[in-house]
Every structure is written in structure tokens, then in C-alpha cells.
Length: 310
Image (cartoon, rainbow, N blue to C red; front, side, top):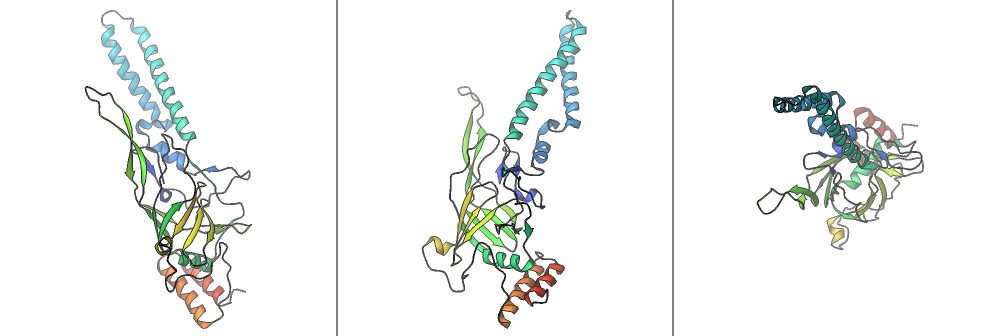
């Protein structure tokens, strides 16, 4: 999540569910729809050309009215419209200039490698089953430098339920303006503020080179520990994190029933026993009941488990 001001907060759940493709040159790409969303959040219609004209006309009207009152004492009225128009144009140009600078600083994301395809229902169900539950989040690198337009938000907890990731905990910096007093002029101070809980959706993809993405923005699943207690991620912003189970942070062993051997690139193997088949089908049925898989995806996944898709 990225906070753009005290009044504008945009989360991943507000953005597109379609795959965002990476730049062929390897450069990070703008988030589709983010710029437009920020512009709509700006007051007075500054970001919308169809509304800006009303702001300019309103400013001109107010300035003309003020100057006319003063002109009663002999100021040449013929110059007033030109002065008012020039002043409004200057104000508008200044606002647009700083707005454009802020838009240029909006975060960019990795995107999916060209040719990536969504995981099939069985692989998706297996991945979600491995990620299910509570995690503690540890950053593996320093956060990017903050700007007035972009504040870093570091969550401390993740809860995976079905195909949803609930991020919570942690703090972020927020600029707050002090009220003017007789002794102190208006000042801005930075305060640590609790993060708002954010919900993200797991939309896994596999790239042609085998890379596994857990969302449509380009967050990479780097590795999973053999005991199921750690998952290393490189999110779409290019920041690496380590997810740890609570028992893993306390240096304990894996609880009974914990995941066994897993890899960053899941391999779909046919179940070799009736129990394995039943488990796979039950997992698919549970995901369909939760609305994560469609009925068609469930049927295809069931056929694959039973070996009937060949």
C-alpha cells in the first residue's frame, strides 16, 4: 500500500485484476489506472481538464469583482480582464507543474514476464494451501527513500485465507501540519501512524522461465523452506520480504501436520493413492465453495487429478 497524502490512500485492491505485463527492456512499468485514480482524488478538478475550466472561470470572476470595486476610484477597467486572466493562468500553470512532478514520482511495478500464464486449478489450490494461515513479515532490504508524494508502508503480519492476503500491523510516516500559534508559525512534522489493514488477492502465474508470481503485478515467489515455515518474496515494487510462521521465529520445530518438501516452482505430480486423489479433489471443492475457483475450473482440475485430461 502506498499513501499519497493524508487524504489519498490507494491500495492494491483498488487496482486492476488483469495481468500487468513487464517492459521488454526490464524497466518497471506504471500501475494501470493509478495515475487516473490520483487525479480524480485531487480537489477543485485540477486533474480533470473538463473541470479545470470552471475553476479558472471562477477565479477570474472573483478577481474581476475585487478589481472592479477598487477601480471605482479611477483604475482603467479595460486592463482588468487581462490582468485577471494572466494571474489565473500563472496560478493554474504552477499547480499543473507541481502536479506533474508528483505524478512522475508515483511508484512503478515489475509486471509479469511476457508469456506468463495463470496456474491451473490444481497448482493454484496447492499454492494457496501452502500459504494458508498466519505469517510474520520481515523485510530483507532497506525501503526506498520516502518523498512527499510517496510514503513507505511496512506491514508486520499477513493472514492468508483462501485467495485473500490480509496485511496488518506496522507503522508508516505521515506529515501533519501544526496549527499556527502566536509564537510558532505553521510547521509540518512527521508522525508515525498505524497502518490501515489491506486486502490483496492471490492471482498466481508461471513465467516461461519457471518463475512463479503470486499476483498479477509481478510479486515473485522466490523460495519456500522445506519445513513450510518460511517463504521468501520479492514484491512487485522490487522489495524483498521473508514471511515466517510464528513457531519458526521462535526457533521451534515444525508443528505436527506442517508442510513437507516444497519448492518455488511447484511440480504437479499425479497422486499415487486413493487418499491422495481424495485430498486433491477435496481441496479443489473447498476452493470452489469459497468462490476462488469457478465450476469449470473445478471440473478441469478434478479431471487432471484423476488423469482424465489427456
